[in-house]
Amino acid sequence: MSLLTDFPGAFRRRTSFLLGEQFRPIAVSRTRLQGKEAAVIGIAGYEDRDAAETLRGQFLYIPAAEAIRPGGHLFVHEVVGMTVRTRAGEVLGTVTEIIRTGANDVYVVRGERGEILVPAIRACVRRIERTRRRITIDPLEGLIPEDQPRGGRGG
Image 1: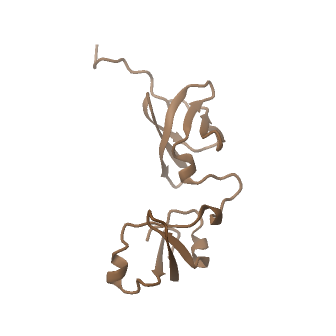
Image 2: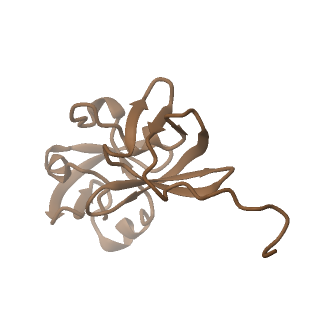
Image 3: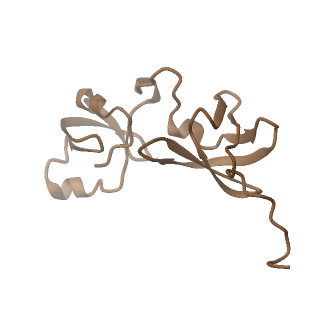
């Protein structure tokens, strides 16, 4: 299974998860990490390959209250859906997904100007207001596409 966490070591201590979109509680019989990006997790009642295959494509979740939250960091599900605006107050759109790169995350923002890729770095992201569900950015040069003439190509 692929891991969608910044704290893979925490999986070793877990004895249960919530399975699928129904968040059905399941017990863990064993866990083996494979680097930082994958794990083999044994689930009680699904000991053989055929039984485990029925779970393919489902996610394992943990309750938010049990999640590791290092100082000030937000979870992906908290950032997706936030409104993104410039320091000047222009609303650019909404975060629709987060691309994880080796160096930094990139927020995919969709709005009237189309798709804008915002690097989640201090030089660009100036403020994230969790309760107001908005992000204020200081756009790097070339980040925001220039207004395109409407009504066709060329001239």
